[in-house]
Image 1 (cartoon, rainbow over the protein chains, first blue to last red):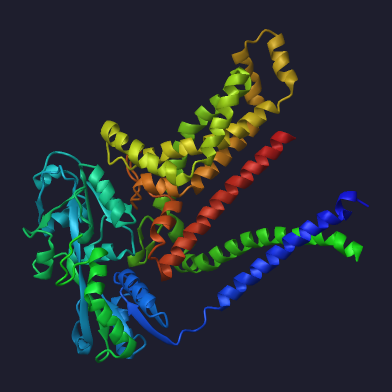
Image 2 (image 1 turned 120 degrees about the vertical axis):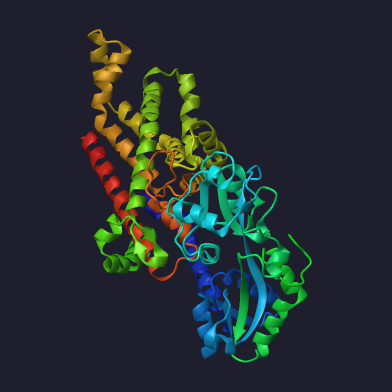
Amino acid sequence: MDPLRSNPLHNKSLLKLAGILLVSSGLLLISGCSQAQKAHQIIIAGSTSVQPFAEILAEEYMKMHPDISIDIQGGGSSSGIKAALSGTAAIGMSSRDLKGDELSLWSAEIARDGLAIIVHPDNTVNELTSAQVQDIYVKAMDNWAQLGGQDGNIHLFTREEGSGTRDAFVSLAMDNADVTPKAMVQDSNGAVRQLVGDDPGAIGYISLGLVNDQVKAVSLDGVAASHENIINGSYKLSRPFLFVSNGDPEGIAKDFIDFVLSEEGRQILTREGLVTRGAEVQP
Amino acid sequence: MKRLLDRLPGFIFLLIALSALSALALIIVFIFYEGIPIIAKVGLGQFTLGMSWAPGKGEFGILPMIIGTVSVTLGAAALGVPVAILTSIFLTEFAPAAVSRIVRPAIQLLAGIPSVVYGFWGLTFIVPYIRLWIGGPGLSVLAGSVILAIMILPTVISITEVSLLALPRTYKEGSLAIGATQWQTVWSVQLPAARSGIMAAVILGVGRAVGETMAVIMVLGNAVALPESILDPARTLTTNIGIEMGYASGDHQQALFATGIVLLVIVMSLNSIAQATLKRSQR
């Protein structure tokens, strides 16, 4: 017989290894099962643009109320409103205004989302019209001189398919026309800001709250991209983030909405780059 | 009892080996399960040869990305392979022992740099210089090719070296004995003799380039349009998945899995070709 294989020490250490593997996999199973059903649960569903913000708010809320579980689902504004109407979801999320039958719902604007069209700080163009933005993003107009800037190629940045920021840009700035496939695609506000800040010929769009001195936000149709202009409704690239429910919200839903509309909730939303009424802090 | 204990380790190792294999099987089954429905719906021809990728409108054509993958990979091979082969010749034939003792591990170190670091370096170093000195937005097929060329060096160099070293000494001695110079010997005797090993090295390098994601996402620009020059941005199959997986759902998500199927087929065929060539060279 092979002396190495029958060595008792050898076998023991192997057994030990097997034991450790067994125990650890057992632990994994147990920890997986211990997520017992929480007593109080509500479902919030709707716009994928609102979803990440709702998730952050829910996380904070659940830290304060460990016995409550808030389940947040996507699906889009329309399906969120439908879910609220039918009662499938306690709260529906919408990133557009309500219309028609939907106006019978109870709704609260938790914040507004603003988009800024950004260029390199050295770019001499300070203002664009909606038509020019469409020329750039739909027809891939390719020289800054055509827009009153210095001669140079326009390098276009957009966000990836499915991104809420892209959806907002396409519906608010482009009248739902398609972004040219020639546009370069980045998958975050931060990446677009970084690249536009590096390239004197670049143009892109990001959440207004994330504009900093790396880039310059241009005015659209003569209206500056600012907190005030979004609140007073004159700046075009803004949309409401709504929570809706069928009838006045009650119980956990009411408590959560109260938290979202409280000073603390507004602070969180402002910190994440949204525009909220009355919140003083501007990032 | 003793016999049972004897067999136990073998059994445990068999289980562990099987679990590794089953992971492979699970991944493949899952990708096909998720991806096949959309290919069936759109049609294989329309999917692989379609020119337009607009998931929001239900258009799923990945030809621009296949061409993007091919062009970036060819660029990487064109830049990287000559350097790699000449480096291996240097290391095996010309380098003094002291030099190769430093160069060889240094090249292997290239393989240990995480791809996100390559990408970040490319973004902050290669991209701006391409934009300033050559033109275009900088994020381009060229930038991707340069990064990938560096990333495939370790693979191509080490396999080429092995196949050069595996040649019988008599080839070299015979050639030198009939009066050929060292360079003539390398060029006309050793390289042709090691041909299939070098081919395998190149194909494995290409496979590595096709599968790379993170580094190219950062430097390629990810535009969906067909690149018209090496200074245009492009999108590869891997970056298509990487950049859009965040918000994808439904058909869009399935289409990304289907992109994965195409990628898997390409990489697997490349690897099998490389294995077959390597086997032929060993015979």
